[in-house]
Image (cartoon, rainbow, N blue to C red):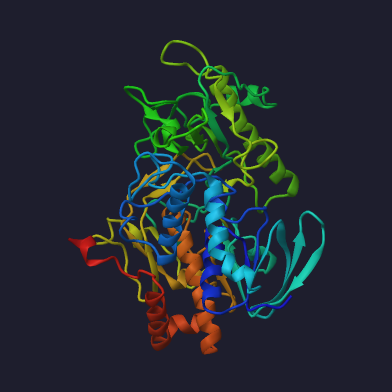
Length: 516
């Protein structure tokens, strides 16, 4: 198969890259290991984590179109009581558009449909890249395996984007990369370790969907590892893992959680709620639906990449068991404010992810392999301690903007949360370009960030912006018969590329009203 661009991984970055490249006239092959495109919003079940200005500015035009289409889908399909411009489908606390994963799947398919119908875009689901052939500093071809049929296909393109969730193309192509935490000697970052630790990787999570149906009993069978997880207590945790207590991410103090809203405590049910039935006129007696992605089901006992297949499978199984055990604990042993025990009315909604066990199709991996890039984003670039004004470092080669705190979850090296302030930031083109390759770009969480700055560059709008910029850059390079590094280092070409980005709806600067 011969195309202009091959994108490995159809998460938000991969889909955005495909949209941008196709809009610029390229033929594209987009591979995806699961049967759903959309990555962290769909197959992993994580509603968008976004900054406070997202409704007005701080993302690309296509990301804003995606958000609008999510709302439009609900407004077309559901009988909404009180329609408003910033309608939040689930009234979740984490986002202004907390919604069912299947809605994003529908929206992304619709946004990509024009290119699929004309055969400009080929989406290969249930497919993984298993081999990459190199010719000096370029990938010359890849081999793709259909995970259902076992069939192998060779594919060729002048450009490749690794938009997989864990940077799967990097080891296959022999591209230099980093895992885990760097040292102070490596980066000079104030919060870096004294010694590097490649295994110091953030927890991952297996999400599941659940509905509350008061007065009913939907208790699942006792999970195989329930007794282990019931007694599990990390050394840095204030109580048993399966409890309503966890460290506060910023202060590390013991923090009280509740299932539903009470006088005190953080209401977990509302945190990632994707259906708030009070907002709709329904003919069916449905209950609220939420997604289980809480401190209590973060899994940090081992990693799933750069380990043996057996070890990876072990940790995936244990992470699934943790989420199911947390559900079972809620159903059978959680203390209610009325003095009772358990919430048997919590129903595992297997239909949300269309899986036999009810869990998401893929784990939510917060931290990927990261390329050794032309430019590596450091804590100093985004920290208020190193930058005057309202934003972090401004880059000459900026291709987008974003904002989020440095939010690191407990790690596989036994470290607690690290949640510290980060200024609204910019995205440097150099972080998307590997040092040692000429025709490969990083289009997901595998960009040139550190373990620390990954904590603010890993969120949904930024991943989308990164992927969309990659797709645009490939189109620009093919049109101008040049290469990514040359575009970055040639001021005239860089200016032309950034002009194209602005014309296509990219925001490369924070707007004037932001600084007022």
